[in-house]
Length: 233
Image (cartoon, rainbow, N blue to C red; front, side):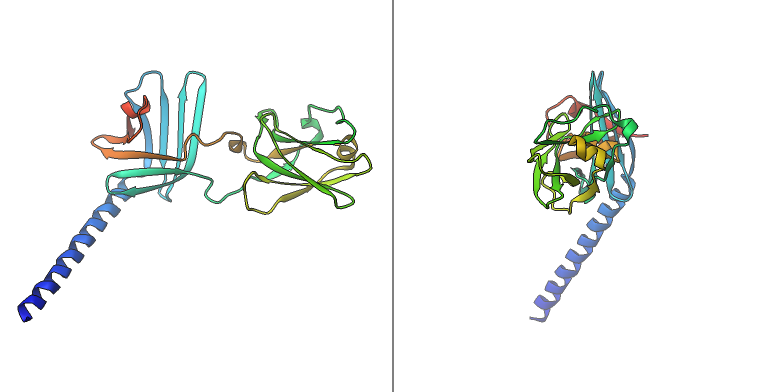
């Protein structure tokens, strides 16, 4: 019985040592991964990957007239690096367009309120939930479409006083902005997202890369990018 007890404890100790060694190797691998990578070996495709020490990443891909991007967090398990796209809990921030930024001055039709969402001189932003609030307290909600417009029906007797904005599907509080009297009179107001990167969606939700000799190789995806190799510069 004493011998068995000794063997059992020895097995536990060996397992603990092996676990510590594996964890140490994983930590060492993770610490060597951060850096700037460039895709090699794929004709007419440019792609970069930045793995940051704080666990965040930035990725971009360009081919022909197409540009894609993604950002979020990265994690490593063994020889597999997983990129998880997301906003890291951040939410877009908005402001009113300045009058000299407005390109549309024609009032909206009576009974219709229009909120335009985008970035001045760059383009519209879809997928923004806009809550319109009248002076009486009456509210209506619409989501901006591809051209940036969010449109609701309101009685002509109502006067627009403010708008709340947040991403579609977000549980965050609305960011409320007062609508200037001249904009309320025209039933047309424009709201700018303060960071233009919100105009472009994420290229993927998750992307796995395997650590191989010379760099990182896209894993489990049949595409031109998977035939290349991300090498650190």
